Image (cartoon, rainbow, N blue to C red):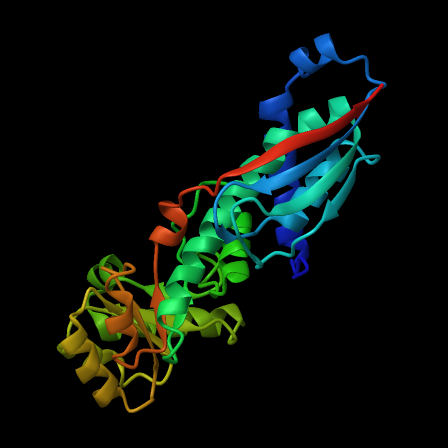
Length: 292
């Protein structure tokens, strides 16, 4: 899977890597400077210490090049591949000091992204017999949205809106401020028309059948989010909807509940925990050879 980034997202990724370099390397890697002369060459292997789904291979290659253009990074696995404990994910070769400086930055990105991809794959495997698609949310680590959302796609999910700017999403507080569901929808539809961006879609969150029945009548609404509804209520919504709107289930979604939610017939299921509560995958870099 190759990096398929917009220019804006690529710029964000490069800035994120630069910030990681600044915070980790600072004015210099003093331990490496003390021990290595700068002429040593090393070969190393990135090894999976547990089973999982790998993500961040291409990001790791980008990091290596940003630290030292003479580092050679050789992937043995692709983003999205399942790996077993002990599998070699990639090899790296170059100046020992450059590799040591790159090590933690590469691992921090790869471990977090692989943790996300592994969790996403666990969810998507459970709902693969249904039409439901797993979505992420904006509950990402601050500054890491670009890589968090990349990892979701690598794991087999899809991205919801990237930020506050690329979809109207009317939630409970918006409805209260607007004075009701009809008023909130009309305000967003009017704003969209005035902005000259008719391609931006409108979604609204509802919590019960009464709210759904109000929202479903508006042609301008494309998505309806079913917030913390029981599976019984979701089934009724699916029946009443008759395919008119795309339905997204949200709230109380975990590996134990997602199968029943998917089987209600909803189109999407959004899960915040895949990015906000990720457990990093255990990966290590092991030096194989040092040549002076």
